Amino acid sequence: MSSQLSRKPSAINVVFVGFIAVAILFAGYTDRMQAITDASFESAKTAVELAIGLIGVMALWLGLVRVLEAGGLMYNLATVLKPLMVRLFPDVPPTHPAMGAMILNISANMLGLGNAATPFGIKAMVELNKLNPFPGTATDAMCLFLAINTSSVALFPLGVIGVRAAANSSDPAAIWLPTLLSTTCSTLVGVLVALFLRKRSQVSEASIADESGQETVLQIEDEVKPVEEPDFSHLLYPAGLVSKIIAWGFMAGFLFSMVYGVITSQSLGGFFDQDFLSYWLIPTLILLIITYGVGRGVKVYEAVTEGAIQGFEIAIRIIPFLVAILVAIGMFRASGAMEALSILLNPITSLIGMPAEVLPMALIRPLSGGGAFGILSEVVERAPDSYSAFLASTMMGSTETTFYVLAVYFGAVGITRIRYSLVAALLADATGLIMACVFSALFWR
Image (cartoon, rainbow, N blue to C red; front, side, top):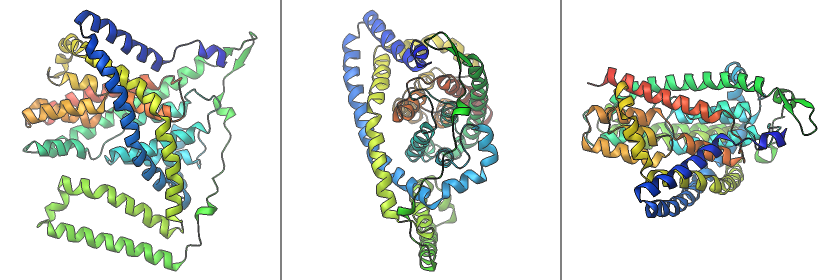
């Protein structure tokens, strides 16, 4: 089977080669060879810096994830959401750590935690890969999880709201409802497409000729065996009354500090200030995790450092994958091909009410979060209360950097054959962009 599959180029391979080839050919036509040469070196440098910058974040949050694992929270969450998760991920045992990690990743994305969601997602991929009978090939569960991840519902797009507030928009949070509706639609499409392609994939791959010419049947579900809960006894101590008192003391102190913060903001409305929420969100989550660990008798320091080691290893492992995809994207942009594509598609995008100044952001959003954020900032800064700024903000909050996510998550576990995950993710992205246009037209005033 592996011999047969290896002869077929993967989707990510086609994308990579396509970006590089088009960039070089287009640069030759526009005389931008020096630009793409500089972009290749700069993008490679940026990829390494990005991966190194992730080390600290990965180490911290995978360490905190280990606290939740040792305390049993992931298994409790998986039990609560078991009916839905079992239907979506029939190949994953209900109590497997991958279930809890996926739930935490989706929850973090919904809360707009940004970088905090990435370690949870990578942790989920690492656990899913333990169930993978075909190393290097994405399983159905991985493809569906990536589709959900790249289109996940955003309850609080605080980053985008912050950009609008900094530009003195009259109503920075006006994008909240259209963003929520757009991401809801994109998530539904991503899930439905992934489920549809999963069935098609099972049919098309049911019979694969091996090297001897005989037929072999591909049945991933039958090959996966339930995995027992890991042993965290070395990270636990008997949790008695003192531990619970300390945990409740943490929460009481936190609530007091929050009330004090609201009072010193001079009005109860200060609690709903976007800066106040965004600043308190991460510390609140960290304190809740530590409090949970103490209450459950987890050796928090030992658990955090043990998980941090894994975070460090994963952050280093993704460097080659980031370098490849970011260099391809950087060369594509520097060649002028992205700009030409924007001009070519403008007659089509104008039909759905997408202004020309927003189109570059829509095109680059799946490729580069930093590039899209730069374009967004420019559009919003120029006219914070314009329709273009409103639409660009909604698009930013309701879409994801698909290629970056695929490169990081699949790169963390060495997946090179991504199957239908890219198709499902891009269709979800397209849905998010289209629905952003629809809902922005309805809610902008």
